[in-house]
Image (cartoon, rainbow, N blue to C red):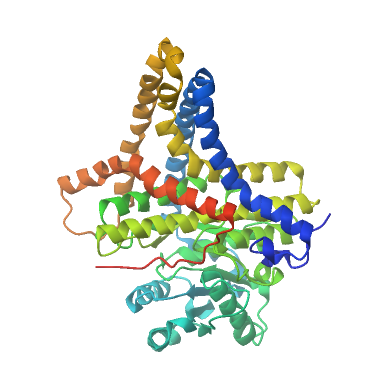
Length: 511
């Protein structure tokens, strides 16, 4: 068996030509939703028929969850300490030990749609403040035709201000209504990368392996040593053209203006990605990241028909190189905006939609598992490890919060009089409550860590403000259900029912 032609650009089952392949892929699209809803159904059914089994299961599950939380906490603090070490290092001096570094070019692609000009300008200003030589930086701003004259004016404004500061500066306009495309970041960025190849890289005969392409969201602010750090890792990584490079996203650009619920989710996302830097064998590209231009060309650029293009490009390369592709942790930060709107209701709606879009990455389960079944050159052990990681992470995202907070009570409600009279029925909710209370103590540690991640330039910051930055974490438990589990359940249910989503752009609001 082998992968179908042009598998790198498959976004859903209908993109496959073979009827058998479409059926298999469609089942794999449904699989995450089947597992989640099946878990809920079995929880209710067995709480009624076998409450004793469920009681022992939930006790074991909450203990497992506590162990998992402790495990992640160690990785989080280790990742944070390494990030601080890398922040302080003089990477440009480290680069000068490798003479070939002057041959490297950074191709920075910034797709934008409806972001305010000031947001885009701040991103470009951070590029100019980089210590990496600007005569080795190519910047491409990709606007959308559907934004109309407002988008063109924004692009021309930043071009006039910044074009002379870099080796090359290009504005591209992604056309609207292209057949087979999902209007979003992936299609825009693929169009921009092709234009850079045609108009800049090929005419100047720059070798593709000497170009590091960075995908930056329009609100991404890079720190001064970022490109130097990235170039150092690129030169020191074996098989660097078959490697992506992942920084740590800090959602702190507008953290002082963001409401408490927005800050909780901003830091939660930051902590998750900081922790994952310690698990490179499980790491998949997310949001702003970098890779060799050679790899991008080898997979014929990003798939323009997917919503979660940042993770999809990893899997495209993974199968193009028959499993010989990985992600290198940079342990170096870039900063982005916390999800905040002008009202608390709009903020909650935006957080829900953003997490639904991220959770929609459950579609990568079908892409990966189908590829595993078809590609025989990838070691079975690697397939098993990555496949289980994908399934478990998306299942946990959707199902675990509800099971943890509800399953301890289901046997009591549905188990009948026989179970209610047992000692276990008396102790079950108390045991679960005790374990969860102990787990909540970890929130104090995450609250303290969030203080260390705050921007150095801050407004008046007294003790009471510091207290509320820690106390805000009390919002997390309920938020995990309503703003993390629920959008994930919706995303996976949409894949299961074939009710596909388009790309939703997170509005950027800075007060």
